[in-house]
Amino acid sequence: MRLSNRNSLLVGYALISSRGAEGFSANGRHIVGRIRATSTRSSLPSAVLDDIDISSEVQLKSFSIEKEGVPQQVTLVSPKNDWDFVDKVYLITCPNADPGSARLDKAKTILDKVGLLERVIVKEFDTDDEDRIRGCYTSHISVLKDGMRDIQLSSGITGGSKNVDDWLGSLLSMFGNNSDAKKRAEIVSNQNAVATNERPKCIMVLEDNVEFTGNLDAETLKSVSHYLGNSGADMIHLSYIPYVPNLIVSKTEDKNIVALSTGQSSALGTTAYVITEKAIETLIQEDAKNGFRAPIPDVMAEQFPNSRFSAYPTPFLRAPKTKSLVNPQLDDLRELLFQPAVVSQVQSVLAMTGLSTNYLLFITVGTLLAAGGVGVTGVVDAWTQIISTGSYDGNLFFLVVNIVFTTFSLGILAQGAALAPKPPDEVEEEGSSAEALDNRA
Image (tube, rainbow, N blue to C red):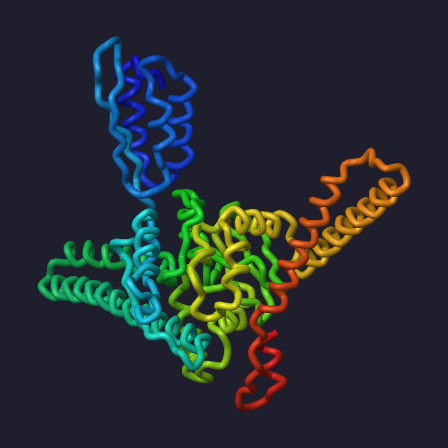
C-alpha cells in the first residue's frame, strides 16, 4: 500500500474497517506489514505502526503524513475483540482481603484492555478464614448458580417471544388469513431451527488475580466460540497452571485449542475459564449432593475428565506478584515461575511434545543432575590441575555458572514439591465406595 496514492490508502482503510473482528488479525498485520515494507518519505511513521494494536478493543490511531508536500490526516481503526459468544462475565473478588481495592482495580484495567470491562459483573465475597480452600470453592459455586439463573432468565425471555409468534400465527389462522399464518409459521420454524443449531449457553468466570499475557486475537476468540459449539467441550480455560502433576496437553484439529487431561488432584486453577450451561448444571448438582469436599479445580477435573480444553496460547494467567488468598506459602515461588514468558514457554513445550508433566519433570531433573555432575567434575579437574601446574587452560567461569544454575534450578523444583498443597482426603459417598472411586478415576 503506497500512501502516495490516495485511492489505495482509502481501499486499505476500508479493508481494515470492514473486516470486523473475524479474521482481522492476519489481514491487519498483512496491511501494516505492507505499509512498513513500502515505506517512503510519505509513509506511516514506524513509531505509529509499532503502536497499532490490532488485537485489542477499538482504537483510533490518528497521525499526520505528507502527500506530495501537503500535510494530511490518516486514521487506522482496530476493531474490538468479539466476546459475544459469552452470555455473562463474572469477576470474583474479596474486598476484605483487598484494602484499597488494588487487586480489583488492576483486574479491571486488564479487562478494559481486552474489551470485557463493560460486560463484567463483579461478585464480592468475604474470605473464609477458617478454610480458604472452602472459601474459593463456595465463591465459584455461588457464581455458577448466579450464572445459571441469569442464563435461564435470558432464555425465558427468548422463549416468551417465540410463544408470542405461535400465538399470533394461531390467531391469524382463526380469522382466515391463511397466507399470513403460513408466513408466520415459517418464521417461527426458522427461529426454532436457529435455536436448535446455536452454540451452547456459557459464562466466563475470572478471579481478581488475573494477568494478561498479550496472547489474544480475533482468531483465537473465533476458535474458542466455534469449539464450544462443535466439540462437546464443557470448559475452555483461558488460563491454566502448567506445573501440576499428571497434566497432558494435546493438540486438536484447531491450532488455537488444546485438550487438557489431568489426574484428580491436579489443580489447573480457576483464574479464567469459560463454562457451558450443561457443565454448570453438573457442578451445581454435585454440590447439592456432596457439598464441599475438595478444591473446586479438583471437582472440575473429576466431573470433566475428557471435556476440558484451553485456548492456545492462553490469553490470561495467574498474576505472578498478586498474593494468594489460598496458599500464600507459594507466593515467592510463584513470582518466579508465573512470569508470562515462562508460563507460555512451558505450555508450548507441553503442547508440542504431548508428554505428561510427570515425564517432563523426570527428564528435567535428570538433565539438571547430569549437567551439574559435569560441572562438578570439571571444577574438581580444574582444581587438581591448578594445584599440580599452577594454571588451568579451560573455562572455569563456565563450569561455576553451570553448577550455580543447576543447583538453583533443582532447588526451585525441590521447594515447589515441598510446599505444594497436599491432595485432599478422599470422601466416600453414600453407597458403594468402590463405585465412587471408579467414577473419579
